Image 1: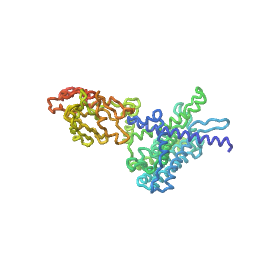
Image 2: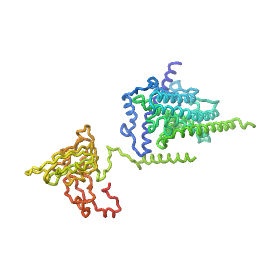
Image 3: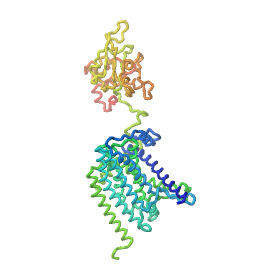
Image 4: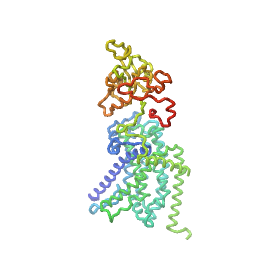
Length: 358
Length: 218
């Protein structure tokens, strides 16, 4: 690898990292503001215009606060858990292509942290790893409520990961018919969603895979431990669950990880179902710089549509009971995802190869 | 399917509320220090000790307010007036008058108990202090001056609003001070300088007859 190539890899990672941090800061504020609007309140309004710097103020406050370590904790795991939460959260978003590649000199810069050919698999692996953070934090705190939260997290994550993975498989199978062979690379999946059907319907995977999209949406809400599936945190029953014993910067890291996960999971949904950064760029009328940035705008718009849904659900739905959570996961979503996988695969096969007897 | 219908119903409620809030049609909270709500006329705020128009103190040091106080936060000691230059028109006057506002529950029973309307309540409620001594209001702070102006504990505070001190709470008694229902609606007491310059309560039958909501009810 030559030096310029190395520089471009660093540039890609730094750009992706910066985008992720900026949108996370905005998301924390946006959630509070949107939920406030839904409850006829004002929401944060003091720090900066419309309170947009509220997250920065909160972050600074947490940074300077003492991180109390309770006496009964299992110290190594206790200190490790927040990092285990943040690192997979960052790594997941590294897979997501968030803009059109552009050229610096002779080198192409893809706006994506890294384009792994096993991108989707990597995402599933990392989102499973993130569960370890919650479980270890709950267990190592040496306290009852965090332990309950951690135990809940294991069961919940396993149930909903299955549904999430199956929904992804259906998309991957469909996507394989759209280009040359199957692929798990997110950049490739986005590439295959360019163009339109009949001139006006974008070739997004959501249209042929609508059921998979709905299952995926429900699963990612559960996977990121958000309301109405936030049994892991559940302030009202188990006082914050796994992060009860965390304070200061260590708590802030869990908090950060949660919001990064919301954004990156929404970004993945937008990428594999809503065509990623695909969208009209108006190259003929707009200057090159703006039309080059437009794909990023489309990507953010689609992602924020789903992020908004997260906030909307949180403001609307009460928390599920534990057995309801399990029922929804195992008795509804997984069978539905399996059935959809079979049906959609058969349909794709028939379209591609004709009837088996013909 | 019923579940999905219920889900959409819920989303419609929150979504509708959001649109109404953003377009400014509905907002429950206000940005308090910037804008303040209209207080009801009978708002129970900080106390004030009144004077007669001639400058005499109304308090006669009878300690009925202290006796009526359910929180035991009023401390009064009376003293005989100097016959040459009396402080109050009666025999005695309250030479110690302290209210511990940390204990006060702002029920207004002291106002009801007072036979001379010496103690009334104002609309001031921003009284937070940084030490407990400042929360015990003494005669110096409670008593209005000869011109009828009520001293503010923290006149330099950005929230200090003299109008709140000049606006007194409504007259609380259901009947006239004499207690006789026949005097309902008749102002039986002297107007004080400064606050307490309100008109008499309309009698019960007048209020029942008018369909409009009574402003005094807030």
